[in-house]
Length: 118
Image (cartoon, rainbow, N blue to C red; front, top):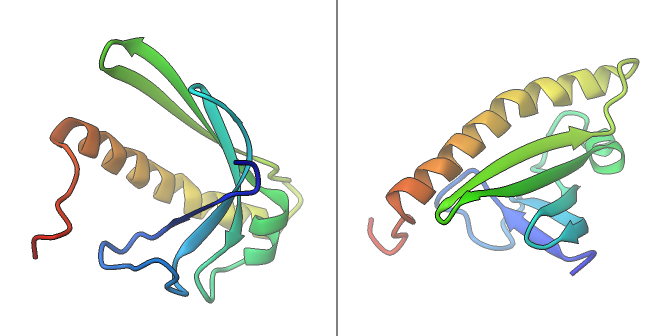
């Protein structure tokens, strides 16, 4: 739903409600083609958290290429070249988003992780 929260973490041992978790608020969607979200909570100490939460929106687009093949495109909009914080945020997410999309692809190819196994 619009305004709903998607909570995530880069840590496999994270639990819902952990203060280091990332919370994103859904801004728009067009199932099954697109969702957009804006950061509502960053981990403590995240550089330029206020700019990220107020200025930047992430858009995920999904394009079916075949029966079991989907192309995922991630865009982040709202960056301004005159904002030093935006430059820092963009650098962070260029690397982080590439890692996240690679991990997402791996999960689709290899299947989900079993978090009950240690």
